[in-house]
Amino acid sequence: MGVDERLKRAKRSLEGLSVGDAFGQKFFGDSGVVWSRVVGRIEPPAPWEWTDDTAMARAVVQVLESHRQLAPNHLADTFAREYRREPFRGYGAGAAEVLNQIADGTPWQTASSLLFRGSGSYGNGAAMRAAPIGAYFADDEQAVIEQATIASQLTHFHPDGIAGGVAVALAAAWWARPRDVSMFEFVLDHTPPGAVRRAIQRASEFGRDSKPSVVAGELGNGSRITALDTVPFCLWSAARTDDFEDALWYTVGVLGDRDTNCAIVGGILASSAEVAIPERWTEAREPL
Picture 1: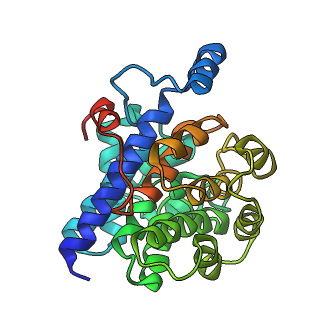
Picture 2: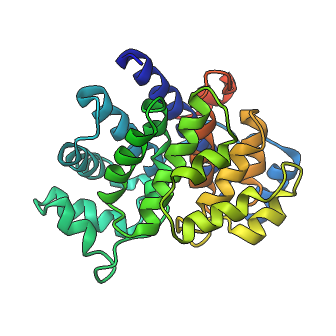
């Protein structure tokens, strides 16, 4: 697969990720207003501002464009520079701590591995930016795993945080390539063993006609901001339909970590050239 085609796929995934991120971000606030918009599928007024999910995914694509792989030191410096340039994008406390340390000259290995008393982060931040990696390396699943692991470790050194990033990248790769197995089969075959993989296995057991609220009730909706309670539901949501708009409405409807959930689902689905992002949604999203 040529570099130009790989980059085209990654940018298409970034487009879906950023639209999902900005869409989901508009559903925080007064619970009555939010729920009435969800039930009536009333699109929020523009502009839709994107968050750290998009900022970090954009950095991933920038490094892929310049290096054709995720050179970890360069990616870490890009993450830190983008954070210092726009710290108001909604970065979590753990990510802010790591990125500030990197910006001040601490090696990323030290900053990431010492977070949370040395256990590393198992949040959903690695997963939120992983879809363009899978889209870029879709024709090489081993590269997907290796590159998603590198990108995850920069801020999420815990095995669960890494597994979340790898699983999302694999799901995006599945959507971007010819398919001879189901998305869940492909993801489960290559995701590292552990709690996240077990929860993805549980997600695969829910049918497409299951109620999202029931699935989220079993798997989590991202409210704990961990890979474990975010990625399994998002993969189920991305597996149930190729309709971008429908998937995002069902995803935001379970509330929780709305912008990240929608960023993950949007980035996965948009990895496929066959999935159309509504033009009016792209126009409503703050420009990249």
